[in-house]
Length: 623
Image (cartoon, rainbow, N blue to C red; front, side, top):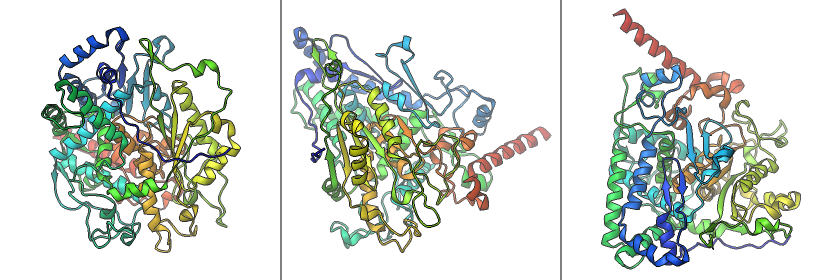
């Protein structure tokens, strides 16, 4: 099959009046993450009347969406077990009298699509983010393009509200000897805790500290100016760089086009009218951000050092969705690329458009959804596909690769400790992508953003050994065409070993691949991987929405790769623990048991917490 390579092209918004009307008649309900369509939208015989109604309604739509988003981020679940009630007493989560969302556990994200048939049991989408499979939540992702623009725009405004509300102070603490993905995960944990405890964020990356993964002399923009992480990322206090950020640029254009027309001001101009709307949105979002402060409980020094989740929320607690999306925004604030990195990204970005098979059912070819008497063209649905190869895979004593797993790992699979990391056959990933295809409207294009250190061989395998999939499932593939030799080094060395001469290029490719993964509306890959977690969080932030996922390695976003996720699940009792726990981040020594059972830090610290609680209550009864 002959390949057709091309660069990705930015999709520009159509500013026709009917499109603007459609944008504002589609209502996003952030509480349930669903779209309510207005029946008879923009029918040909009433376009003029609807435009007049649109112009007369003012700016309340986007402000209402902001309020609904904040409300969904603030609603928490009621405790459902005695253990959870005890956790609340310890200050680990919400309060017993918090608003209820159907008595779901605090790690469940619920979404609703009113356009699905409730008689078929598909109206509500439930995702337990401790599970390995949440792809069914795709059914509740709105298909309207304007809804995505609204979500993305409000996400940008949320990050701006965070920056306007915090105190920036001093340099960021950077893990210079950790790979980029792992370092970003730990920096996010540190930034989140600093914000929640003291309303502070680091102002800048240190310019005089070197990183073992960044060679500043390779980049003219950094040479003699920036060292280490500051070479790749701009100061946190600076505005968000939008170079190459098509999602965000389109959202900004949508906002200006939708609201500038009300006062007949020129599109794409930051006029007085749009500034006033943004200021009112900022007031809503900053009030929410301000309420998320917390203070430390009086605990032992050991517990204060290791258990960031022992906090008391001073004002309104957050829902699982609020925790997740807000936490993801901190990852995006840290991941503020310098513009030259987008030039490098575009130089290496390659695309393949398979020649579609001609034996598609005719009924599927004409299944484009209709609105009124017109057909609606859907934007492509994007999937981030993270496929681990190379150093990620275990080897035998002779340093030969162990055969890849034929099936994905279940939640109760053993911990994958250092040196014992599983890799999976390509078909495991493709089966998940095919499931996504079946969850989408038949005529909605499917684009896959493939992150792997062996893109050429992976694409060759898909084309030759999985030709039926290649010809019928994915409409476009996007990947980075770095040479495979960049990822080949002595298997006796770790990626961060000083002997690994390839580590500098691995820093550059890591940032490029993380940006690639940030495009997906769904994720297939490795959430046990710290790199995979960061890619998924960046996608969550950029879309400002929950990203459905399928993780092949038996680990959810809440688990570390060297934990047995099923065994450790009882000790993951709230979203704070899920997102901010890391045994290395907390400098916890697992001892020799690590090599047999993986990290037991979470279980040990949980039991210490229980004993502390029992001792405290025992002293009170004695008095």
